[in-house]
Image 1: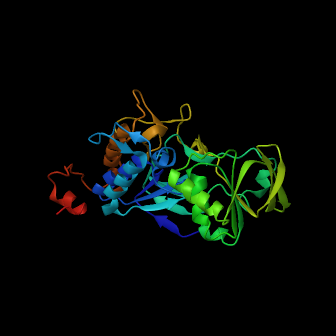
Image 2: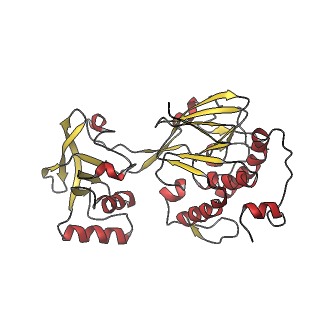
Image 3: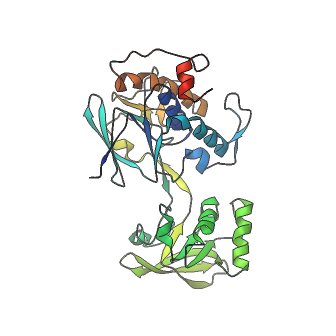
Length: 342
């Protein structure tokens, strides 16, 4: 077992609701750690619609998903939350009243007084491409995320997809890889135009390869990939030599391990009471899209409200002997000091 990480609150999910919860918790002197299966913060806002405008954040007529994420990250800077990205909480074990031990799929162990589930509709899971036998290569030669770029140094990498993730990693891994081949089913891309331009310039300069078509089979043994069979748009069959494959076919939402944490569920959502958005397990809260209660509306602004009320109850668990005095940031000098306001 790895060294235990101790914190006041563990927030599962680093989307907007989880990020703002860290702000509210920080105002009340509670330290938070985040775990998120994605390789970056922002949840759906950053992963699914980073450039899509959002019009219903109070006081902000228009902001992009990435812009909102950036602003929230700036807002919580004074509280120095710690992020553990590219990991998923697999088990939540009750060890006190309340106290919890939470373990990730990477073997990281947390002990905390409070758990906040802010996982949106559940965890993002990569979509597996319909290639026979791909499971045998997963985790060794086929990867659905890049956790350490150094892993791909001097590799022949086949990247499959036409969105931002595929183009971003094509460009980021190009300096490290022995050779990059980008494969997409058509010669049109959903990625940022600047990224597409950079990719095409590398292809024109002979520094990487672009292929059009789909992977129909993989070759190799013992989980070690040696090549991929590609069916072109003209029905031609060719082989692409590669020892690593990165398929980016998008993400799907699944409840995931939440179902095994001993909390009540209702239609794949987590029912909560509405004074603090606590689950049926004392000390475990659920905020944002993953919870349900009478009158629930799935809006980011509602998740912000839920995080504020959650933090008031969480304080009782983290500081059971400390009286909580409600203060406004506009008038409290102690809160302003925490925020670094002059």
